[in-house]
Image 1 (tube, rainbow, N blue to C red):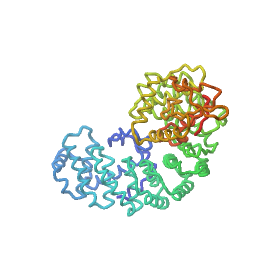
Image 2 (image 1 turned 45 degrees about the vertical axis):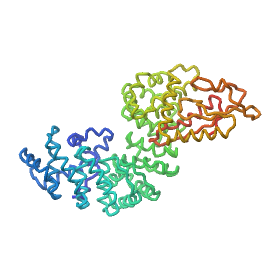
Image 3 (image 1 turned 135 degrees about the vertical axis):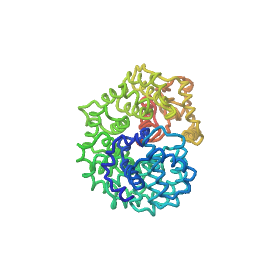
Image 4 (image 1 turned 120 degrees about the vertical axis):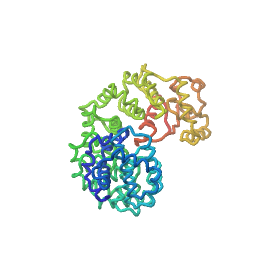
Length: 547
């Protein structure tokens, strides 16, 4: 069965009708994109059909037979593999026909899933993979979780002895359960290299998607280069969905590319530009993000494509677009007011709801927009309104309002006469202290320890929050024109202003800043370019910054 299973074309897998989702009980998987939802579902249909027709030619289970099946629940553990698959198929078939399943059905599912937990080590590799695929695809988490916890580490141990076809099936399982960490990366890399020469494009895409879903990064530059060579050879025959998967995989490994390599990968897709959808455009922009290395022709096309179809673009794609623009000279877009177009879109009622649901993207969007141009007051009033902030899901990103007020403070520094929303000092202290002291092993605590040592080493210096909207304080010290260090003025130390400005222009105000360099990873907890913005604001206030 496994060989037939893997002959299905990728395009037919990906064009499976959406109704398969609801019939399989997977319509609630909100984290999957439309492409990912459809990817490979015809594989499961083929497995189910093959099993059903093997045991029941009319593919119907009468109520009487179903009752007989339920009566077997205490004896499930005595079944052989073939008998077990018949029972499992009956359960799956009934689940597809009715959403209102009785207690007997759920009790039976418990026994069926427990049988898999107890018996999988006695099955052949093909049997394990086939049963696992049906269980992961058709059963809910409360029935499949225990089995997944047992069987996935077991399968990972067997990777070295798997055939290439079995390995592809294993990677497909990872697509179904998503959160799974592959630890045998070296062995996995050798299997991936085998796939490049032995598998079809469809199967290789299954492998790429499995690695992406499990957040498994390659460690071998050699393997990565072989993949890039494969993509270069295949670039002209990749269909739209395959192209999306390949670009997603390549963009996930952006930290491994050098500047020349990033440009080379982008150039591979130069002649495919007219065929790129907005999803693919955003992934191409991500590939050059880490090295800030871009092919201008590709960027020009991708940016204009995203802007032209902005109403259909996800918030995540807009975020990637802004990250790219922050690293580029906008002169290539002289005929387009990019920032204004994006601001107009983000202020729409539809995007307002989306911004609330994705607070991390909201913060990154605001930071990058503010780096390109000062944010207009009406937009700040929208995102800093009490109603908007109360609606934010803090449990998903606790510091979102803290970062939002950071934007307000930077606007007050950059725009004289700013009268928009501002936080209270009490609020800033509460949030800041909660963040710093929540974990004694955190980076913030380590940073405070380093700052304390600097304060001890630098005579007449003091740890203070110059910009209280940042969690990490700074070490401040003053020098005269002759370079003589003097104590900080009392009025400066006791200042209760939100923004601590130099009080004497005749002195040289030095500030030692600790923080990460610009983070270009989309999974960073710190907003991209926040550190650079912090340094710029300190300089605008009149400080001499020591990094």
